Image (cartoon, rainbow, N blue to C red; front, side):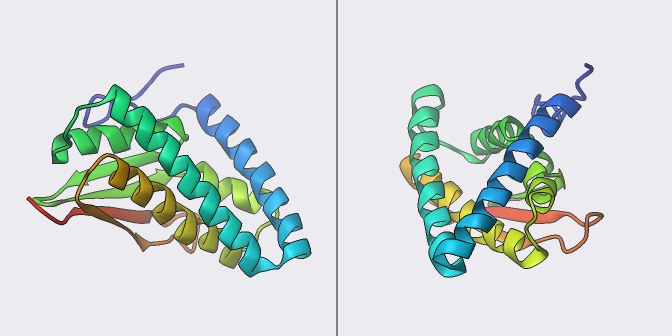
Length: 170
């Protein structure tokens, strides 16, 4: 499998990584849907948030052991790109003066959640709740003074989700 090179020396996820991740997210989507039937959407979404916070803790600890002791914009960009790749997400990374913008070109969560039977509203809720919980927790553990936001959630497959990490202190 050939790997296409990306801005910070990473690569865009190959078909096998993407396919495997999509299948996992499809299973998660199907599981989420069944749990929501039993516990209700609100309670299930709260459990999803907590699970993402826990994953943010694990990610933060792992990254702090493997990465630079302090994160400037450049090292944070490389770290976020590697994190996305590990999840099968292909993204374009745009570095601003005090921020990083990630335009997701292809996302196994988006495709997987739908494949698992979630509707657009449920899939968007999982992303809007899960991503800030995980990444926000990770950034805090890495002592990065930054704020995460999901600026745009795609409403059609041909659109792109846009995420942003803005440094709060220079």
